[in-house]
Length: 230
Ligand code: FPP
Image (cartoon, rainbow, N blue to C red):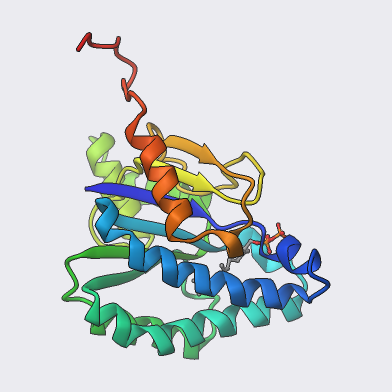
């Protein structure tokens, strides 16, 4: 099953272009999350990882951080039942110790309620930094001198609350026109296909996801080997 990771960029610009506050863009962005989660299983996607809040996002104005945190809590509260109905299992990856306790409780409740889902694994990256997690995994590895790729992937999985080893990304999508990774899933994207689109996240929905997946399926992944004639 395909693992798609998405850097959801462009909420602020989308709102500003409409003469609205950035918050409006984030709220619309939450709608896009709903559409993408709904569309993913039928596109052969087994795991979706969404970059909801990077550790560097703490440096945004406090009011915007508050809006985003409220949106995450509201999403968990309003969507959990729907996730359960749709067979979606939710995991939140990243640090939890700097999150509001109410949000942490909402995350735990939602993870527990959706734990039986088998159609789609939805991973929300909140207070996430790939570099910080790699540092944490390497710290844990210091007591395991025979560490190799698989065990480091396991330690990385443990460091991010993900449960199980950090899963390789097949397709990384970034919306909003920028073309960079911004400290997202650096280990897991070693052989990911990269897909950049100028579409702003609030305008990204089922059709845009289908187009990204269609293009991904047309690519030849070689993992450093030579192409095999078919
Ligand atoms: C990037 O757009 C987006 C974010 C930092 C937050 C992502 C959050 C959402 C999509 C809202 C809801 C999410 C969930 C999971 C319910 P930006 O603000 O950096 O846009 P800009 O580059 O145009 O300023």
